[in-house]
Image (cartoon, rainbow, N blue to C red; front, side):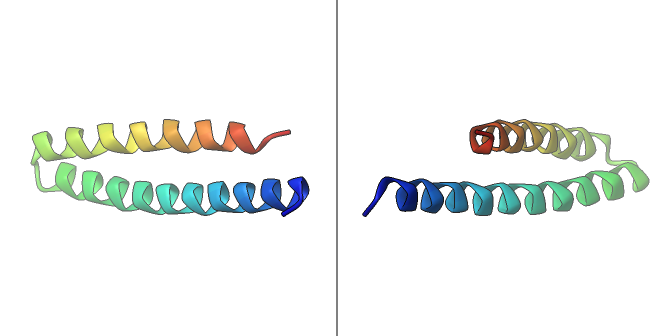
Length: 67
């Protein structure tokens, strides 16, 4: 396997991982908003915190993709 093919395969895998992380983050934001609406602040803050951590992880992976 050539180096360019390996790099392309790695960047594709990282991009798919970022897409999965962002999808999960959107789900968590929805759960947090619903928890705030029903006045369950513990669950709302917990899911919002996990969502922020996922956003940071996705940003770190996106930095990996930049040349």
